[in-house]
Amino acid sequence: MKKYTIKDIAELAGVSKGTVDRVIHKRGKVSEAALKKVENILKDIDYQPNLIARSLKNNKTILLCILMPDPKIDPYWKPCIEGIDEASHEFSPFGVTIRYVYFNPFNKDSFVTQSQLALDPSFDGVLLAPLFQKESITFIEACEKQEKPYFLFNNDLKDADSQNFIGQDLFQSGRIGAKLIHSTLKDNAEVAIIHIDEIFKNATHMQEKERGFRSYFDELENGHFNIRAYKLKHRNANNLKKTIKYFIDTHPEINGFFVTNSKINLLAALLNKNRERTCVVGYDLLPENLHFLKTGVIDYLIHQNPRQQAYLGVTFLSDYLLFNKVIPNKNLIPIDIVNSENFMGYIKR
Image (cartoon, rainbow, N blue to C red; front, side):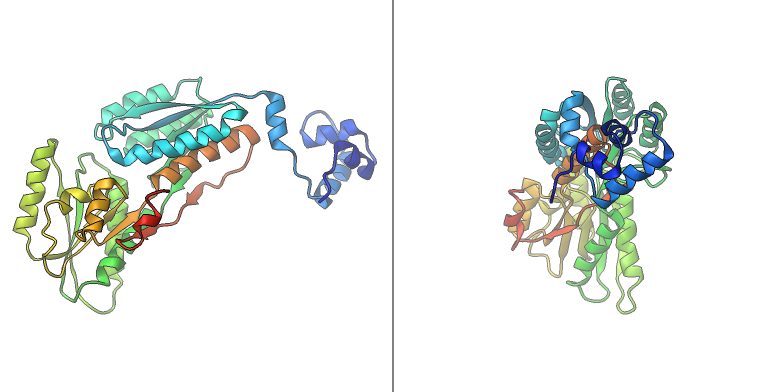
């Protein structure tokens, strides 16, 4: 395919090179007739500007804020750092740099405090993991007021008027968990939806999964299953284990366990793998979870791919700020089902 220069386009349109330059870069005055001629030629030749060259010429620098949970507190977020660093490395030649602002994922006040740092005018854009519904909406409203671009990952905010989101359909994710459990259990089975360590209000990512899970069973025309939700939580890790152990011992009737977050290993560590007619489904490829997947205590893990979510979030923000690329508001990534037979294909991703 021929690469057209501004001179070529000017000759085809019968106008000056200066006119073509003004049309392409949307600057300066151009007559209506000349504008139409140039736009028709650009359409005919499917002209694509050299965005990379333009960015280098402008010598533009971009500083992105990564507002996310501290991975030292919750290891689920460690893969996100890998994805963010990879995207940062790819865009560093174009002047993109990042700065992490961590908050405690179990402390609303920590998020509020750290989110104020993210509103610093020096940041050109923000990538946010919005765990706290109300506070996150307040934050993105502040971003919009400042005209500061932002992207959300991991969790969608249902009550926000507008947002740019990269992640999975959590409702559909819950339905997939229900399908996996349904396919292994007989009628009249007792099924538990378990929210482990949901210590903050409005944990929408867990609630959406539960909603999807219940919707699947509600729509079944044949068969009957008893679905109950349980919240197992405690501030102290040792007491949390005692709470889970007590729950398991006092509910021998449960045949299916659906854990809505990455802490399924806490349940699996205390669950007798010889327990009859049991199906265990949870989330995320943490080393502890993979251990129990390989040993057969966990039947399925739903891979949320936090690394890819964070990588794409930085990529979309960089593309928008550097090259003015239009990014769709909703960017959903596939929901992968991992078991003991296929996990090896995922752990190196």
